[in-house]
Image (cartoon, rainbow, N blue to C red; front, side):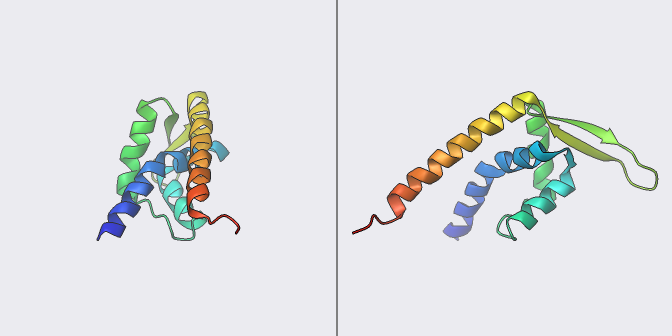
Length: 114
């Protein structure tokens, strides 16, 4: 279906920004990020955990986030990620671009008053 392909591409293009925005609040682990994206979007956006980890590794490789392993008694080891200063600057720029994009689309799709 073309609609599903379009949705997939749109989500892929915004996944970095969504993850960085959540990490701007505080450090989180991957599963928590995936659940928050689904919850806050009220189910409209679902980032599958297996596709999330390559995204996190890519963001870490670009120095936009940093990760560290945390072990707690009785729990399995988890990797927590936090936003770096470079990541914060990148997020701010992406959010600015996103707002400009949405405004441009609205100028075209929202009818002008008669």
